[in-house]
Image (cartoon, rainbow, N blue to C red; front, side, top):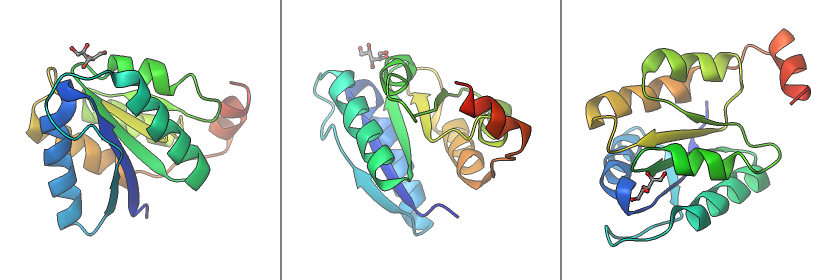
Amino acid sequence: MIKRIIIGSDHGGFNLKGEIISHLQQKDYEIIDLGCNSAESCDYPPIAKAVAKEVLETNTCGILVCGTGIGMSITANRFDGIRASHCTDTFTARMTRMHNDSNILCLGERITGAGLALDIVDIWLNTEFEGGRHQKRIDMI
Ligand code: RB5
C-alpha cells in the first residue's frame, strides 16, 4: 500500500488540498506538500513540475489540485513516466489505476466537492494496477 504522497496545489486548489492532507494524515499517510502555502494567487505550472519530478525521483505517487484540475494534468503529463489522471468521479479514479497505472491524481476544487473528492482519493490510492495487457499498452505510450 502506498503510504507516501507528494501533494501540491495552486491557490485554486488550496482549500481542497488542505482537506485531503487532513484526511490522509488521519490514515497515517506521510504527506510531502510542495506548495503553494496560502490562498494567494500563484501559478500552477511550477507546482505541477515540482510534484512530477519528485514522483519520478522517489517512485511514489502524487496528488495535484487546482481550480479545474486541468492545468495541473496538462503540465504533469509533459513528463515522461508521469501518468496524471484528471478525475471527477470514482469510476474513473478506479479505472485509471487498474488500466493506466496512474501515478498522479488531479482534482479540481471548483468542480468537485470535498466529500466526493475524498472518496476519489481513497479509491485511487487503494486500487491496484492490473498489469498484463495494460502494461503492454503503457509501454507503447
Ligand atoms: C486559476 O485561476 C486556475 O486557472 C487554475 O487553478 C486551474 O484551474 C488551471 O487549470
